[in-house]
Length: 267
Image (cartoon, rainbow, N blue to C red; front, top):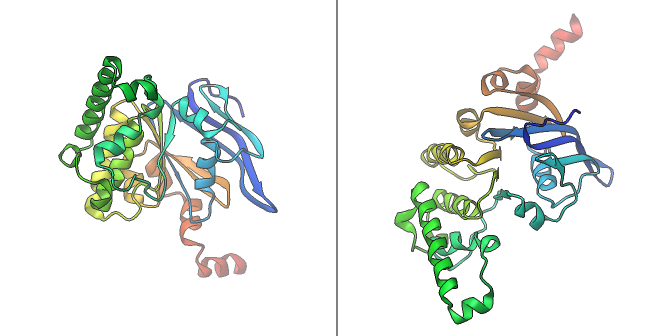
């Protein structure tokens, strides 16, 4: 694969095996700045494994992951996060007993310049930094329509709101690329519609988005480009309309009709 100089993130022929199982094989994927890219496929297709290779949880067996042209394959997750690649997870991971604002403030730990000792002494510089960070977090909560629950215990809130709190916490770390793993999981129709708006607002704020999602309403309404994988291999890519009608994608999700097989065999 020829490196795309315009790519923010590029996966070049990446693959990974676990024992005798080939989980991802020869996958190419490009994400450009300002895009919302969807990675979709049936259960077990390897989507979360791809995310884990991007974020340093797994090192690819083959190929390379590049960020702004720099190879980042094999770097530890914290170094990848420091470069501006942040993610959420399928399972919500909020801090129990902490308010929404406190959870979001925790997302700024990589950006804090003052030492723990300055915090212990409450120096003027530490107080100024804390005030500025709290304002940034409140701005994020306003943008995601969460300011009204800023002081509520995060884990006591409805599931859809908790999802947005997790996104807000990730945004507090100032990502360039936000990776969303099943953000609509467990949401009802109204919450999914709110999620669509949130993802578009995040992109409009200057953050590029890569998401894995099973809710096709979300995928088709927010993405600019979609990559489809099945059994670890890419089977299609393109805009939402092209993917919606692609026969290989339809077969991967729904399976081939036995009548079609009979007709092919008899032809």
